[in-house]
Length: 76
Image (cartoon, rainbow, N blue to C red; front, side, top):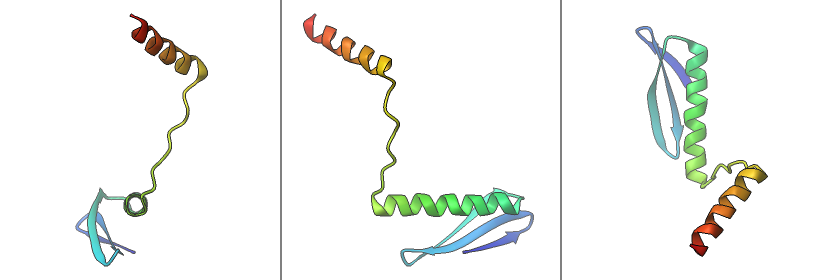
């Protein structure tokens, strides 16, 4: 992993699965560029490994309302 500057914009470069990923962070800040690099690598790793982010379960009142609506739709 490496960060480098082209003009006033920071770019990052790293290897993933045998491919070189070289992209602009579109930022003039080195710390923002480092965060963008880590986020990009994380997205690649999650998509490669088939990791799916789970969503939080619904609040009971919301889930009960949806269930009631689905039951009323079947009756009518």
